[in-house]
Length: 211
Image (cartoon, rainbow, N blue to C red):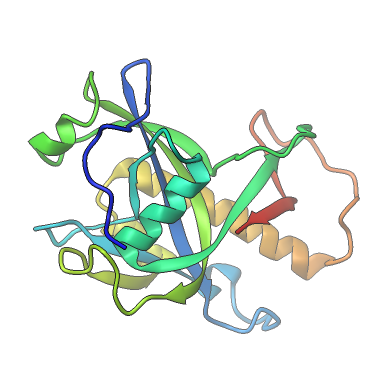
């Protein structure tokens, strides 16, 4: 299966090109090992940009024949050669399951004229998800142009090319750390009361998975 090319089916919203991507991750230590900080149990997968050595998370144009989740999964497979489970969380007080990402970031491409042409006004909106990696492919569509590297979160923050992706990684770490803490404190407490912690809140106990 080859990578999609062209922009004939690209989605736009008020002149913003819509982009979907993910932070692929894995746990590398025993989840029951309480002596290891949860952050140190996490590794994230990054890929190099074509003709560059800096690192990014898989992302690309969200097209009009797919959902935002399908676009994120496709980009992970095309750019990083991984498949897995996308984690989708509900906002607190929201009873309807939605394709809710870690966040939506607006950014302007600084990389190349090709990227700059991605949107009518030069801006993009990036929807980022967390992807629990279940399979690493030995061959994938963009492997000739990209190298992949597993990194701990601290390394990833230092090497990440874009500030908006660093922000997405910080949000990912917050959500995953809360989930790890919740499991350690009481894996059975799924219906306890939830304190008010701000306007946009995510309770990791209300996370569910989408294949």
